[in-house]
Image 1 (cartoon, rainbow, N blue to C red):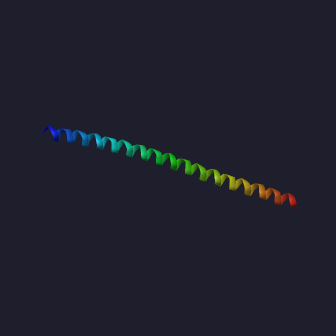
Image 2 (cartoon, rainbow, N blue to C red; image 1 turned 135 degrees about the vertical axis):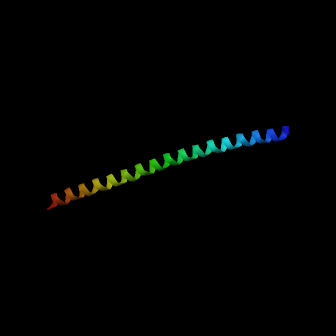
Image 3 (cartoon, rainbow, N blue to C red; image 1 turned 90 degrees about the vertical axis):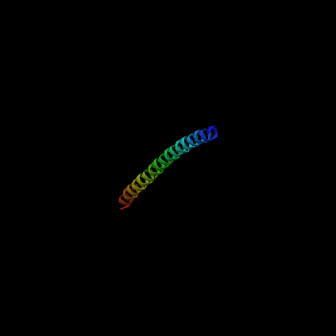
Length: 62
C-alpha cells in the first residue's frame, strides 16, 4: 500500500513537470512565431521602400 502511494505521488509530480515543460515549449514557440512575423513584416516594408526609391530614380532619369 505504501509503495503504491509513493508511485502515485511520483506519477503526479511527473505529470506536473511534463505539463509545465509543455507550457514552456508553447511559450517559446509563440515567441519564435512572433519574431518570424516581425521579420516578414520588416522584409515587406523594405521591399516596398526599395520600389519607391526605384520609382523616384526612374522619374528623375526621364
